[in-house]
Amino acid sequence: MVLVMIAAAMIVAWSIAAPHAHADEGVGGLDPVLGTAYAQASAAARADGVPLHITSGARTPAQQQQLWDEAIATYGSPALARRWVLPPSESTHVGGHAIDVGPQAGARWLQVNGFRWGLCRTFDNEWWHFEVATIPGAPCPPMWPDAAARIDAHRGA
Image 1: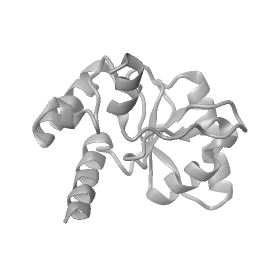
Image 2: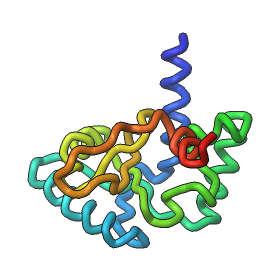
Image 3: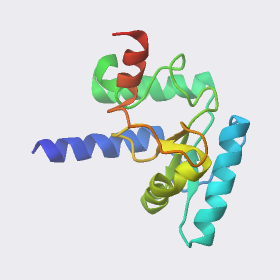
Image 4: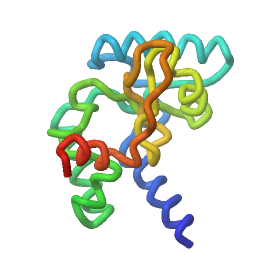
């Protein structure tokens, strides 16, 4: 039962975090380092026959606020929502420093190969979320359990 609830929460989070799951948003608005890393990785994925596209990249503060408001309504509290969506002042998407990718096969490929361009999956509960988190070719750091855990750790909470 707990696994079913977790799976349902992940599906809801995916629909909130990546509402355009089939449209490649491209690299517009992304930090140049992230945009270049993704462009190189997506070309390599294509060469390997793996579909990979950005479902959500850079967001405006207003877009992030809408996602944040929807997450609070879905999860019932800011504390629970922060596991899946952060407010605009805390989200790396707002600065163009994060991408959500799909489909799952592409995300799996990127998780295995992304380190070659410095791209790493950063949150254990979000298979779709990647950031530049290492220098190209170096191993990715351990994943945080969720976005809130990283923010809280940096705040010393």
